Image (cartoon, rainbow, N blue to C red; front, top):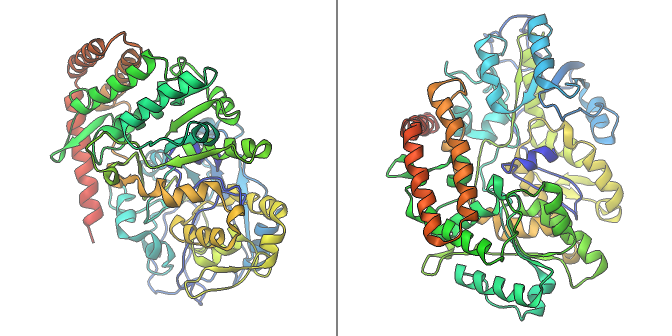
Length: 555
């Protein structure tokens, strides 16, 4: 689950007060009658002639799952308290087929040998090749029979996930209907207090504050943007110079949507203005001087030791929450807090969107044609994404940390939940990597309810600023997700070369000796981009964007 956070597209973050990564789930009827039909090895899922449903728990069900990540090793199912309860209660057993550090090789070996797992779990862009090879089961026959996914994800999300043939093969993980995100501006509390708590709202305020920090704290980094070679805080500053202009346009899409089509980023005067500001911070040594070369560990070390005054990153909460926890251990007046995103004077601060969120969530699960009972597996996944499944797998068996539900179906927390935070953290963390089809919409509600039930001094630093700031300053760009061309296509080749050029120009602009040189570097970059064929790429991206919009509107 931690790798989900590193992608910057995770809906939730690590909670210190609750001690776990938690996301959501939902409800619906589970059905009562065992199905008279089931898939057979090596065949696609049949369309049931009757709307009979199979009930999870009515008989034992076992299936295998392959996590398509080199870093991922599935914890043993049934070894922790939560999954053991599900195993016993629902007669469900899940067996891992682990990648052993090389997921591509492992998957290819299974495909060639015809020895596929029942379920593959991984990044959404990895499934099309499998679909084209005819090894995935379409899920459409089950959507009405087992309604939790359809109810909670909704048609827009499911339509976005449909393949070229119009069928649905992917069961999304951590899908949501609400804003998510962890990007923003983090302030060193002790330094800010000692400097008199000056106004920090505009780019002018920020510049003045960084100068003051440099003057008063020579051993502190005034502005820490994280790994600037990957954009990070540098891209966040781009969002400050125009309304509804998330960093994602620069760092992820590398194109600006304007009048219904993607246009050249280097031709955007706002991008030039932002890079002039970034360059100014670098030239005046108000920003990390090794921002283009530093490692993740170096960034974490500076944040954890409080050697930064202002930290800005697309995953700011993930870094800062841990740094805050370490600093306040030694000094209750230390730590970090977040501010509303900085904006250029004259702009509406409520229209500053620092980054994006994606309603599709993180990754997905797909059932393969190797599965003997694909319908039963879908029923199990659908249960996992239901309110009951969420409560049992993420919050534990009833009577342990919760008992009964309120009018919204959210669990009522028990005294044990509050009395044993360390033990609770250990138990909740144990199923982080067993949450394959999480529903962030519902689980966020549980999470907020849990937070509000805690004493104020015990509430999560992360949730406080997610609820107050980051979730309100992230923009829905779901329709612009998954539009990248295949790497070996003409547009894909242009894209790879364009990414290399973009990173090169961004780095040169940061290190430029003057404002005029910044502008000249970007202007030359624009000419080089057009020579590469970036307009052809932008036309392709526009077409795919419009296709996604049409999919989402389709009933």
